[in-house]
Length: 87
Image (cartoon, rainbow, N blue to C red; front, side, top):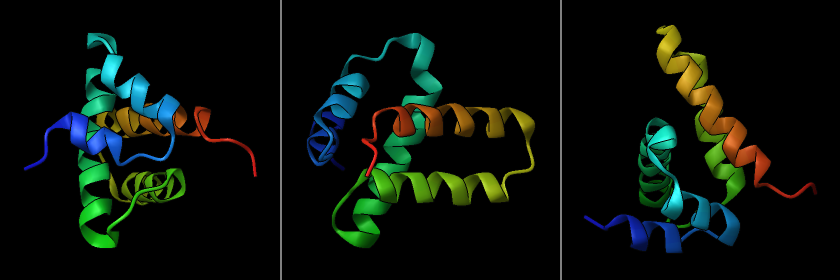
């Protein structure tokens, strides 16, 4: 299993990677979700992008019934979108 530093180095977005490395306890749930999503996308696609993270988070939001989990997913999605440059 890769440690977070190795996972975050796979991110093309350096600012998002730095956020994840330096996130404090206030963002613990969101960082945990991103760790899972990043590992999942890397395992299935072999590479990672903000777009693939966003799509995974949206899919997860579509399937979740628990409001607390949905709130964490939404906050996580907001973080990633905030670091995603407009195309």
